[in-house]
Length: 301
Image (cartoon, rainbow, N blue to C red):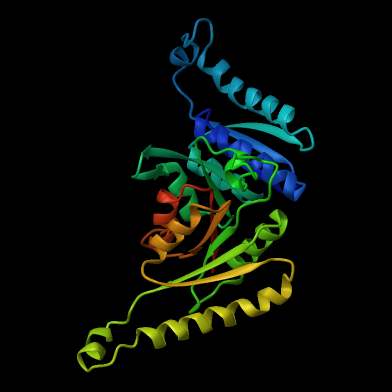
């Protein structure tokens, strides 16, 4: 099966924003978009009962992907858009679809002004179990949000892309995550900001008590490690402008802060095949729920 950018579509504003983001990404990658609408069967009397005038449940579920696809084709005539309907448990259907997808794109709903976004149970289940990259897009996300403002300070989709941000653990850097981030920067012709955040070791208190503050030395060592990890990637992608951001403090907080001025933030999720269930990881979980820009969660070994 040909690789596609697959969108989980349910008719909500966030899923429509996800479809628009997928179309823009498809243009960058020269790939088709697949709109996947999943609905769980309901008893026949309920399925045939009028919802809006003469419309039935079945009519409505058919209309959602059709109308969305027609809109994408009008706004993005250069890309191929297909639709598919499936019946079953949404998380299971999306997981199966992700196996043949280059990317899986899902919506993320805003909770309120400052508390972040809501990645529903379906989205979290899929992210925790799939090995395909998953992109989360908030409702209201527009093309201009990913671009720099024009000279007059007005949002515009005609200017260059904002930077791509990637969270990096220099202790165990993963090629899958770094490759994804560099490729996204290259496609966008956008700078890449590599964020490495670190916390003081437990021995810090004892060092200070002994009259020695190791913060400056630790900061220098962390910065050198970040530079060393990125060196071969700079050589592989000479056209990508890379900024190194090595900060003391919470990795999640620094990534969320950097994401405010980014077009995309990339975080890794370690694949854990444990009998006690699957996990997303604390940093990825926090960024998913609080970053205001699209988030790419990239699974890695």
